[in-house]
Image 1: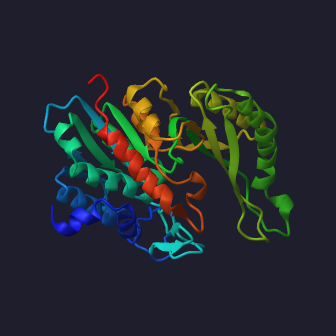
Image 2: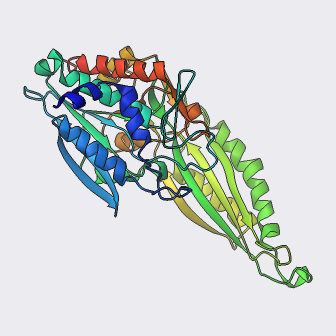
Amino acid sequence: MNERKRGFATDPKKILRELVALPSVHPEADTVGTVPGEAAMAAWMAAHLQALGADVATSLIAPGRPSVVGVFEPGRKARATVAFAPHLDTVGVRGMSVPAFTLTEKAGRLHGRGACDTKGPTAAWLAALGAWLESAARRRSDIRWVIAATAGEEQGSLGAQALVQAGFCADFAVALEPTDLKVVHAAKGVLRLWIEVPGRSAHGAKPERGDNAVYRALPLVQALKDELSPWLAAQRHPVLGGCSLNLGVLQGGGELNLVPALCRIGLDIRLHPDCPAAEVRRRIARLVARHAPRAKTILHRAGPAFVTEKSEPWARRLRSAGRGWAGADWFCDANIFAAHGTPAVAFGPGSMRQAHTQDEFIIERELRAGAAAFGQIMRMPAPGA
């Protein structure tokens, strides 16, 4: 390792500055002139990990959209494989009140797109890794450390899905997310649906000649609010609480002088393990049949909930380095790893309240606290050692 890399690799703020400077907006976002995709971030990650001595492989989820997996083998026979999984992509930057791709310091806050979600947690872990590689703990280690940097997390964990489908697994996985250094051991799943209600177009001056799709949709919208939403809220889980329904999109028509021929309803439903998506879809189908029988329901996205028990040995070790336990309403790559047999949690410095915001930031002392926490977990022996 050259001298510049040695000093740089252990400073989370310097690492974060470079990561924020690399636009990695996911392709479905409003990029406002930036190059979408994760290619530059993936190239940086691969080069950085190789310089630190990892065996590195990349895989594509789409042209120009690679995920990166780096493996650090221990000097002894590996007793466990532990994966840390940041995502390479960010949301878009329209309307940001701070420079999107320049790390800007204000009163102890480090601003920029991804500074919180999730380049800050990534920088903290990479700094801890750099310090661990220079320590005596590395020579004593019997743990295989893996970094699985995924593309497409903001669009439905596409990179994590591709990795597990290709056989990726570990004894434990940590999705690097801003959790205030709490161990998120449970998170809700997601079910997103489009409901398309048809009508018939006509001139706005003769609305009786058409069939207004928005009017057709309104009874269904009311039923979703009055019947499905309360039922979901009443389905309680001991860790994750109730389920929820958000009607996030209602689209109908395009011009004032035309009768709308189609109305689209977009639903975002958050579920826990005791409330299966199949049952929710059956209830929606009954409401559609009753209130908008000609409508078509289209699955946009589905992802599983997960609960990793607090007794899981690696989760307990991470908890000892962090600030307690938490559950989450949001979805991340931990859901995917857990659903495919790898015990998983989400963990990292920074607050989810800042994720995706106009002035996104991470507090510098929290960034450094995250590096210290990751360093602590890397110095611990494997369970049972």
